[in-house]
Image (tube, rainbow, N blue to C red; front, side):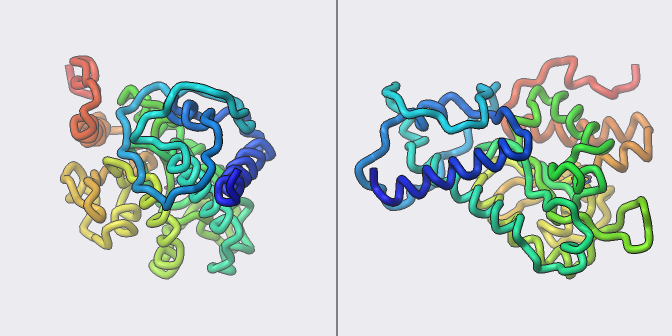
Length: 292
Ligand code: URA
């Protein structure tokens, strides 16, 4: 086994052990990745190839978060060579380790319980970007797990996808501190956003999603630098470094404003996303949140 391959393997195992230590027992793995992982190690590591193009959504298999033993198996898809998949996983694991050790915002380091890096399928076609972790996310180390997160999970399910099919991240990886307050959130400052955004840029470079959904004004501002109101921007395609980006309302806004018309607005934005990704859309899905 070459040194390069051994390093990648060790980084992957380290990442999986880290997940296990945090109580994660299952991770989504697509069948092509599973086949690639089961390939015997190459004798030499070729120079890094371009990332495999994103694949259509499916229901990825779920496997235990422990290293997969090598065994002879079918030839992997040529679009997903083993070292490209392993290198991508290792690069994401290394980026995660850097973010978890970040001390660029000392006031946030003091206040945080966890750095909330991001979660989901690193080969996802669809990336959701929110603002910053709230109290629940800070406690659990995972984005969108509080009330707004539960609504986001429902929105994702309504498209026919699951949280495990997509990737979810935030502009800020640490919870904005609220000194002297026991509850509540605050918007990240421009300085905090500028400091943290390189991590998200790197995540997006690795994932290479086909579509990004920016949840709320802060996500749009962080990714595009646009400060026009979200009610003006939502529903209109934008471009983030060549990738189509759909701005929509943040799920927390939908929790505050229960109007059916706003739910429909968000749903129409998601229908546009589904069309862009060529996801199947049933008549029932088309009519969600329409008045009868
Ligand atoms: N709101 C966000 O923008 N991100 C989270 O992770 C949770 C709530």
